[in-house]
Image: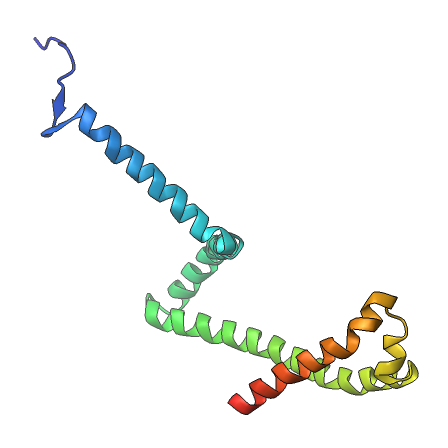
Length: 145
């Protein structure tokens, strides 16, 4: 017959009073980890959802290629690269097409001076200094290249 007695003060060689600081340190480390990962939390969550959504089709692909997981992974990666590459190519093509339109719109406004005339008065006064600072920074970047 087993009798329940008082809870021992030491479990596994570590006393309960020694566990409290360790738990506090672990809690502090978890808070710091959350603080560090906060900027990328949306990407991590999105990646998790993508994995959940893609798991079943990937397992079907593994079955289709007779259990060769490496081949299935290569095919899936190739498909993703083609889709993302196509979207990037489309974005680049649209950006290149936007340059002439932007030039025309800028000319319609009277160039940079015409756009500057639409700025609030305090910004118009600061524009020469801002443009010199911008051109200086851009020149420094070009010199570094």
